[in-house]
Amino acid sequence: MSVSDPVADFLTCIRNAIGAKHRKVDVPASNMKTELAKVLLRERFINNFKLIEDGKQGMLRLYLKYTADDVNVISGIKRVSTPGRRVYVGKTEIPRVMGGLGTTIVSTSKGVMTDREAREAGLGGELLAQVW
Image (cartoon, rainbow, N blue to C red; front, side, top):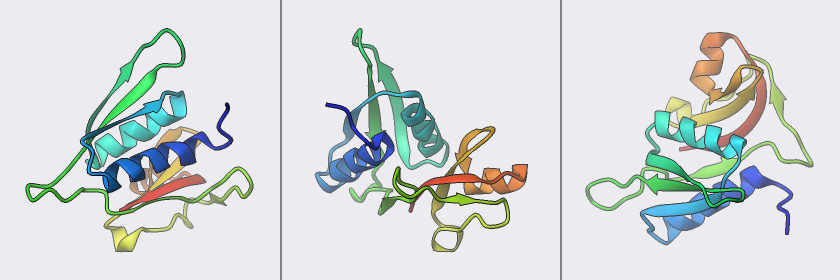
């Protein structure tokens, strides 16, 4: 069965794993999900990720990050743009999450990047997700 919104499915898998206090989560791999995982790793929301080849699509294993007192680093994760309602912004309209404490993930013409990286590069694009 095909998923109509793979990015939302990816974020939901992470959200569910956090709610269940799992240390790792496996999701079906794709290029977009790999780029999202790279952004989450760069912003230190996850410990690591790896691509597991299975002869088909492959699996992306994310290692979730917790603090010393067993509280997850990701307190919230939300999909912004959906297949039914795409949200595009210019370089000056990229929103800040929680006054800069969170991260907006933007898909630009130069690839998937954070809101800070997009502002520095002077690029706008599609708002994929917000993480805080």
